[in-house]
Length: 81
Image (cartoon, rainbow, N blue to C red; front, side):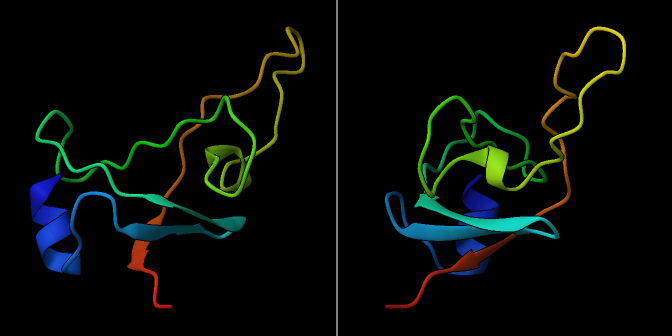
């Protein structure tokens, strides 16, 4: 969201780190008003260092064996070279 980007001093395409207690992923920012200001979205279907699965819980439902929803608390940080 533009408000989060402004707070971080980030522009569209800048690399940002998304950090949870389980890991860290780096991906380019895509700034949009189409998401809530308090929400971060990352794709989780693809491999690589920018994938959300690095950050989330690998737990499965004990009956269906389906993965739990990909929801977790994170912080977003600028990446310095």
